[in-house]
Each structure stands twice: as structure tokens, then as C-alpha cells.
Image (tube, rainbow, N blue to C red; front, side, top):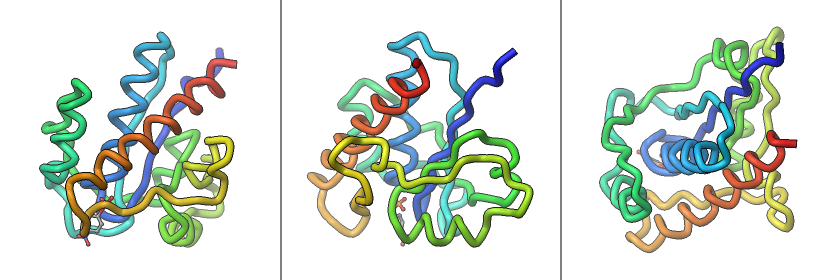
Length: 155
Ligand code: 4NP
């Protein structure tokens, strides 16, 4: 039996970008009828136990998805043994994840936008210190990546 793919998205705070990536992939996988396990985490611990930023909740809701029940958590070494795929939202996150990854980690680790043709090597811009419109850009980026992940895993 093939293992169900399990995907972890990691950003800095786990209240803006990675919860939106989680929401987008859950939605795209459901549309495609693809069975996936999806979660998100942050490299930092400031927002452990907190719901997503209200602007992230708002953009998800505009796309019909309620993420008010999500709660922040910090990534752990164990995540590299539990998940099949870990995606970093930007290059700083990727750098930190390489340091956290244990020697016996089995998950693949890559930059999320590497999944999107033409966007390889780029990060999802952190919208936290910007305005509301930045969250629409985040949603667009993570949705493109989510569609690409579903396509790849459906092959
Ligand atoms: P995220 O955004 O990494 O996309 O969740 C941030 C959220 C909070 C902070 C930084 C980025 N912060 O510094 O608290």
C-alpha cells in the first residue's frame, strides 16, 4: 500500500503564510478528490496557540474557507519523520529548517515556490508588516503552489 502523502508548510510565525498554504492545499486536494494529510507550523514560537492573523482569516473567508480554528505551533525535528514533504515558504525558513532537520529525517525539504514553473527559487513575501492587499498576493501564490502540488501528487 502506498503511504498517504503528508504535507507540512512552514513559515516564520505560522499565522499568515503557512496557514493560508494549508487552507489552499486542503481546498485543492478536496476538489481533486486527492487524499492528503496537511498541516502548517512556524520556525518561531511567538504565536504558538494563536489563531491566524485576522487578515489571513479574512482572505481565506473571501475564498470560502474558515481558518479561525487553526492554531499556531512551532516546527520540530519529529516533523521530518512524520511528514513526507516539508515546504518552506521562503529562503530564510528553508535555511532554518535545514538546521532543524535531524539526520534520520525522511521528509523531502524544498522551497514552496519551486513547485510553480517560472517562480523557482523565489519566496512567498511575508505580508505581516504590510497592508491587507499583501494577503491577496499571498493567497494567489499559495493557491498556485497548492494546485501544482496536487498535479504532481496526482501523477
Ligand atoms: P508568517 O508571518 O511567517 O507568514 O506567519 C509573520 C507573522 C508574525 C511575525 C512575522 C511574520 N512576527 O514577527 O511576529
